[in-house]
Image 1 (cartoon, rainbow, N blue to C red):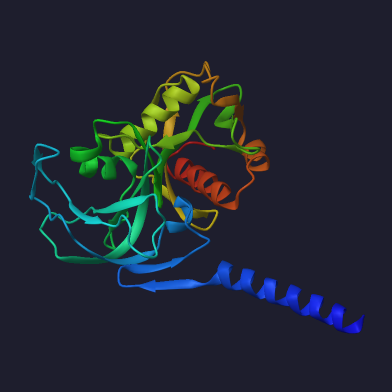
Image 2 (cartoon, one colour):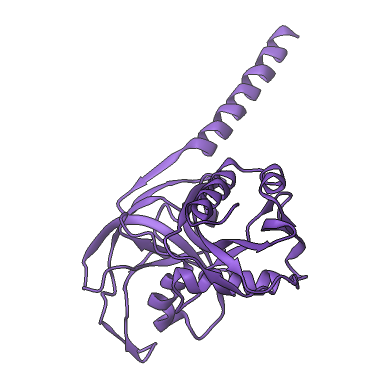
Length: 288
């Protein structure tokens, strides 16, 4: 009886060891290092890789009917990469390469489920529309999704003044969040940061604004440890005050005093932005 129990215990230990080995085993290969249980596209973001370029930029492709607009590495079938990873584009470099060392800044997912890694030099923090501009020479004909390492949003601390109520600040409650914040959104192709902020405030609240010169605050934080988000805030005076919220995304909009807004904001970074906005207004003669 004792021997049988001992054999069962030893067998169970062996199974646990194999599972632990499978879970944490690293495969070292010429083209990179991957944890075999972390092959989802989010887990690839930020990984440093060395790849061999098989189709340099400006190489003519009969399949595309044009030259490659970016360096490309074939990865299909290579040991250490998931079977649905077909290759990698190298963006941010416009000269032909033989090899490349850099980080994965995005993962492209095609409609057939296959994936393409997007690599860039570690100094370049390209966001979605910048990546799309460089890979659409080959990927623009079919729909695809991108999950990116870096994101950039722009918005504004919007205020208005009146003799009766003084200075009021605009906060919104987004459907995807449990906290109040300032109107903001992602940059789109062809936009600068100011244009994005003006458009996003108009789309989310229906309010026209005028940006005040000399105020710019930046918050940088990580989302679930693998996505880095930068949010740029401007200070803006409302030209209209009647709110028409974007019902698909915004639950509510509020005009609040400084004290009310500070109590409503959850994140210390947002509170710092609001405090600096009031300091700016006071320094420019507005009793905020």
